[in-house]
Image 1 (cartoon, rainbow, N blue to C red):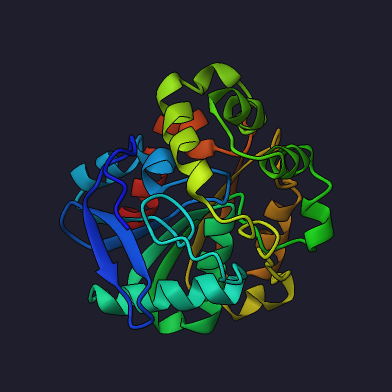
Image 2: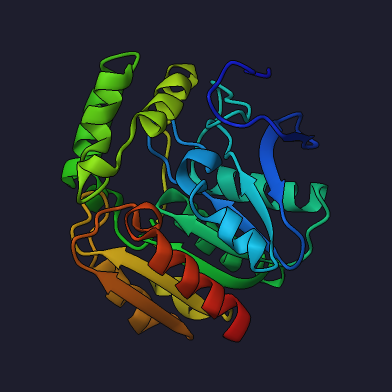
Amino acid sequence: MNSPDLPIPLEQFVELDTGLRLHYLDVGQGPAVVWLHGSGPGASGYSNFKGNYPAFAEAGFRNIVLDLPGFGRSDKPADAQYDLDFFVANLHAFLRAIGIERCTLLGNSLGGAIALGQALAHPETVERLILMAPGGVEERETYFRMEGIVRMVETFAKGPMGPAQMRHVMSLQVFDPALLDDAIIAERAAIAPLQPANLFSTMLVPNMTERLHEISAPIFGFWGTDDKFNPHSGALKLIENARNARMILLNRCGHWVQVEHRNLFNRSCIDFLTKG
């Protein structure tokens, strides 16, 4: 069901063979970059990447900014098991439905784990990977000991999240909470009450570290050393286990490098995409 009153753009929907409807933005022309956001309450492709994809469009890329199932304006089935297989299956079906045979997958946190999962399950579809503090390189227990995850789960479990509760959670998302303007908080606070209760309890992502060597696509990534959601030791796991990987580690940076270091992120990614 559409939610035109949400404070995020309403653009295009595609209905998968399963009947699931996914919302996405389609901006620019050229080689395709598919943007996969993280799992925080109220997340959407727009709220995660609105400061980034316009620069990619100007650089000559087609940007598919997806709202994952359970998020943004996409369907939010209450009976789904929101595990990695579910997200990868729906991403793969989405790419087929909109006619993308091969693309760069760009993902942060959960979106990064989905990108890794897609590259392992359907390597023919992935030309490059750009990852920001991706999930899927630790055991689940490690993530659930992180301060940011603990606060996120506890706050979400208490019931509907208004702007004050959303700011309480997201203040740990970034090194400098002053970056969280009222628009970002409003975007996410409007979506969070619509999300199913089992979204986070069924969100199971396996540790894929031992399979990273199977990925032939070049990997470029970022990690903030002040990340309170995902330990930055994961950067070394990618470097040590993937065939072709480079990572940028940043201090004074939390879990949202594309927001906290927008200009560095945009120009570094565009350089990777255009020059290799």
